[in-house]
Image 1 (cartoon, rainbow, N blue to C red):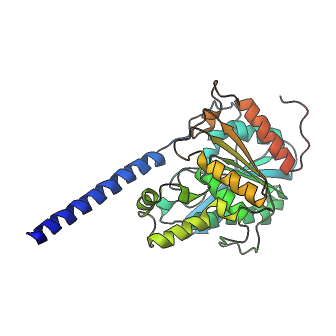
Image 2 (cartoon, rainbow, N blue to C red):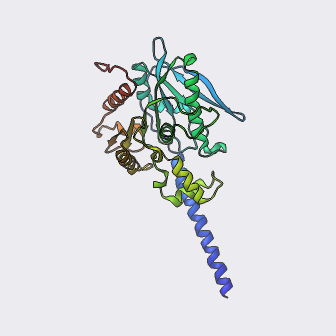
Image 3 (cartoon, rainbow, N blue to C red):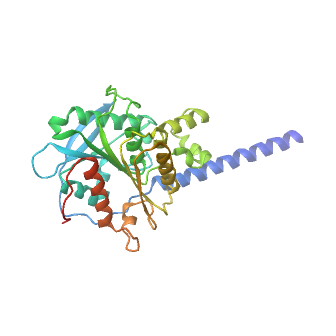
Length: 319
């Protein structure tokens, strides 16, 4: 009887754990299906210059370059897309058309990169190696690509912002095919609602969700999450960072931004947080009419930061 009871209890526990795992994965799936709300699109049609920067097995990783009018070389703003590390592509830059157009108005080229996704059979730190390789490729091919070495600002949203932050803050780590000892000089980072410390998410839920992609043990995974989190690498000599984060973000809690700012203050890093009281997990939410910081004011802040870190003269008037 005791043995039968034990088997029943054990079976119930397994079923409960499986049900919990399925529920967590379904919730995580909702996150993966998140789509950046669209902003009004410009009538300007932009044709990119597309370049393969890396080939992994048979998968080509590409980047697109969009140029402002005039003759180069140009400073460049390099974008990495969001998508919870499992979806998205370099075309997602058009979810941020107002920012993209503002860069081009300032004479800054815009680059959007692809990187390997978890769904491609890879995991951390493959995506970080790809981002680093893309930056090294841009630096090496700067003359042909008509961009300036040492005048690079990185930007991204959500997962892509986290990758850009970690890459910029850990210039000697996550070395991929490009064997440069250090990254090219990064002038600054603009990060829209990034996760800054992966261990601030509910640990067991995130762990169960990531089992699908990661084959190691739980403690090794915890160490990996620490290593790939941006906050781990924040130093006094880190490049200037602009954080944009909504206080009502349901996907990456606003506490992630506060945690990063506190660590920046502790180490003496230049971290500037711009918060949005009614902002959620999208640029569109930052531009809501009830939000005190409208889209034009937001673009002015991004412009001021970009001109400062790229050593560009500020414009006297807007439009």
